[in-house]
Length: 239
Image (cartoon, rainbow, N blue to C red; front, side):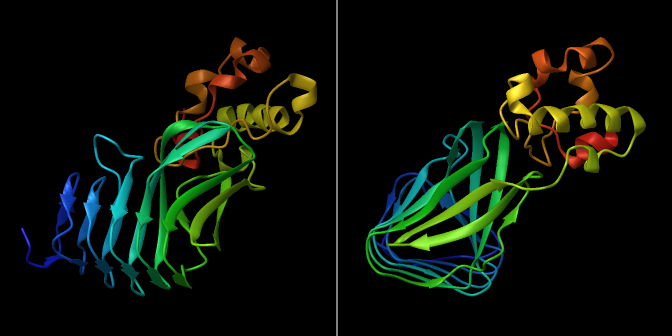
């Protein structure tokens, strides 16, 4: 296949090699996979989403040049594994030009127990010009995301924010339990729990009272390590 291609209002996943033709990603088009591509141009409202269903945190390689136009998106998936994290990324063999594109970070289930993370989301072997939009669209409730760009690499840096677990609870039972967790995460030396052990993900969070109710509240230090998926949705919906 050698003709140039345009992805428009659809999904193209490349897990093999498509290096004989250039690809443009237009309005509501999505280009993903873990394969190898030629030149890629992501236009306004187009989405570049490295990774696949078989390897959601894999690398999509652009053998040519990558252009991310204004209003385009680089969609990254990530999973926390305690102090580490895995994420999808783009490797560019040629040059990269970023004209104010937006970074989107979607975190799958995992244990986001660290205070800080650095996720490499794009590496350009050729010159990297321009910059992403400074605001990262993320669904992590208790970690703030910022963009760092240097020496051809683009990273999303995550750091524990000041949002308390109790602040996202809306019912008395969960507010009390969330307060216990806030104490635990702010006083690790006393209870032996890592700071921010309950940083969590808004969409797939485990409901708090499923894990910590009744007598379990008295034994919070012993059970705290299992509570890594608490979100604003989970706390507000819990009975």
